[in-house]
Length: 218
Ligand SMILES: [Zn+2]
Image 1 (tube, rainbow, N blue to C red):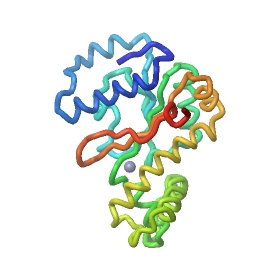
Image 2: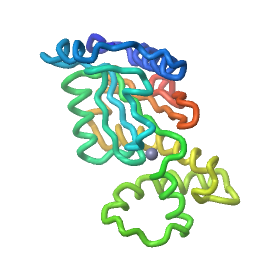
Image 3: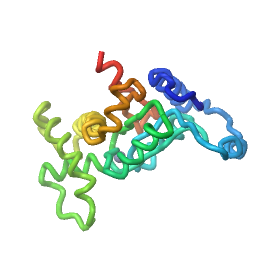
């Protein structure tokens, strides 16, 4: 699904959703992957940069039925972005001119669960040296969702709360992109980049779009 540079992000997103419908319907394209390797050996022009989670079930290229050369893919636990991720996106969108960033959260996210339990004070001490780098950004989303919904149970034991936080965390990452990267903000402002947020459901395989920069800016 190579696109010309500056392809309309709405059209790109619609084609990604068609790919997800093929995935759900067990009708993925039969691909000659070695041929795709040869066809892309001289260069790449992916139409999307996916910002997803490391979760083994939420593999962007698979669930959107993409092939070789179709997508940049940044995966950090909890679909957060750090400085290196932002630099990577600036290259993808500013140099290669990929027209769409898709922030892809998912249900049942372990990083989101850990952030919920940390905020609720039930997580217990962690032996992981760099866990705060993952959880700190998500804790903002936990606090906002908790204050908005006042759930009786704000721990990982409440799947509805966890998934509410995950949706909010997609929105938070989207805000991060343009607040922390003037490059990405300029591209959006100039109409050369669209940003969309979506949730992947690990029980159905479906991708649901939850926001787009082009609709919210109307
Ligand atoms: Zn996850």
